[in-house]
Length: 141
Image: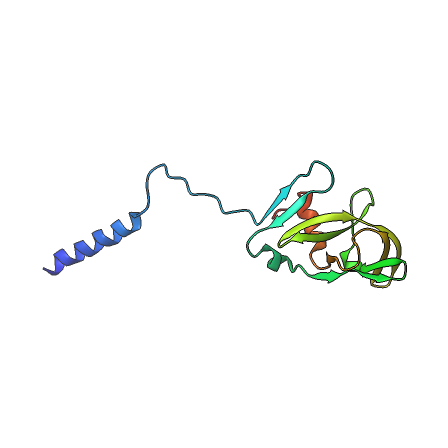
């Protein structure tokens, strides 16, 4: 009787290994951690999925008004390949859009600008360079 129960166990384990396996069944690829939506005009929208924002260490700081200038941390500033000056804002959770600014002064760790997101707007400080890379397809994500 012991021999029979041993074979039954082997057959059961082999059958369990085949459960859900069908010939020709393709597995779906894992969802990309980010998508880039091209806009008719202007920069693309970058949407991060799942824990991508956490892994990139995305952090926000509000723009402040200093006299006639707007102020943001230097870490929020990114440059495009033509030397254009930009910051990323987040119009919705995990959605990021690059927004042009006109820098008037960089002093220590602060950027002062005259055109761009108004005071109170949250700009991305940590993770801005990574968002730029995702937008332009640099590296892999």
